[in-house]
Length: 145
Image (tube, rainbow, N blue to C red; front, side, top):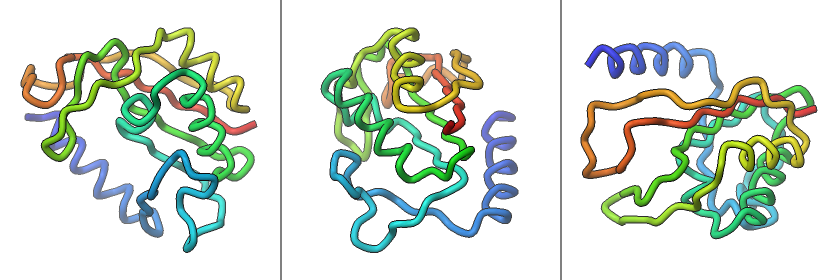
């Protein structure tokens, strides 16, 4: 439970400093935020988006390039996912995510024009496998160069 409390506190502090949040419509469209938003951002957080929505590594790389087009130069992206996952449940629907190796993730970020500042796995939840079948989360934090 302390992890969730800490997360809630961090989220609250972050929300007080951030002007707002925007949900994308479809990462695979040329402008996934269309028609309302065309600006660039300082930070983008993608939580279980890319590996769940991409069917192959080419789509994953293109998704990162799409994310990059919405970041200001020097802006950051935080991607939270789980590698080697056999399923994830989102809003009651079970998905089979794309499986990539750590080296493929890092290489894809670099190819999309990012400097990878951190990319590793950490333990993250209490073992409930009704939503996800992994006890480890993969975090990549990168800067657009």
